[in-house]
Image 1 (cartoon, rainbow, N blue to C red):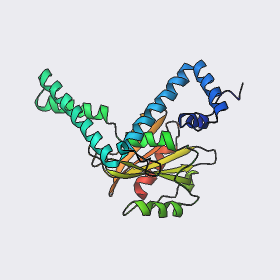
Image 2 (image 1 turned 135 degrees about the horizontal axis):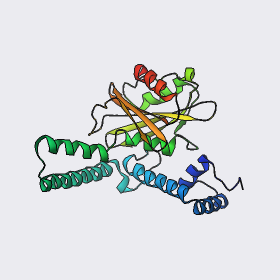
Image 3 (image 1 turned 180 degrees about the vertical axis):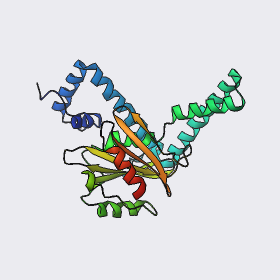
Image 4 (image 1 turned 45 degrees about the vertical axis):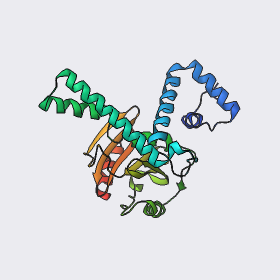
Length: 250
């Protein structure tokens, strides 16, 4: 019976379609008998679809014109324009104006574009993935890789005092340009990730803050040329300390 219950890693592999056929059938039987878990996995699938659209991994993209960075940016821009047009019509219909209308606009923006949503999605999909773009054991290795893709990259922090060591990184991209997910792991296999990217259209300078998304917590801020987010398990009490260390180090 214990063999039928999939591990967290196997569930991620199932979403990524990396399980062997026999084990995949076992996981399908388990999900059919556990609708709550099935709904959770479907949420991961939805996140995967969103991330593949908004964060096109450079190293894995096939020659598909729809996934060309220019086409992705154009599609995202068109969707934003449609959303703003709909919001403007709604404000006019409701007779909202002045300060009240601006407040409604800001509320709508935060609801549809929560801060560093791409960081949470990237952690959920790739932090525990079987393979990253690069595997490392020391911060210096991660720093060298980071310097190849980001100008004026800040020093990679040493988190060994909190029990975390670097294990690897993945290069991503969004409408603003390259983004990166740096992954750290402790002796128990628990992982946290540091996500960085260029300032976005909605959050040119990221206000210092935090939010919970499901079982994950993101603590975010801006420093220098980049926006950052530390993503961890919401129940991990070390995350707040790590956040303060990273804010100073970066």
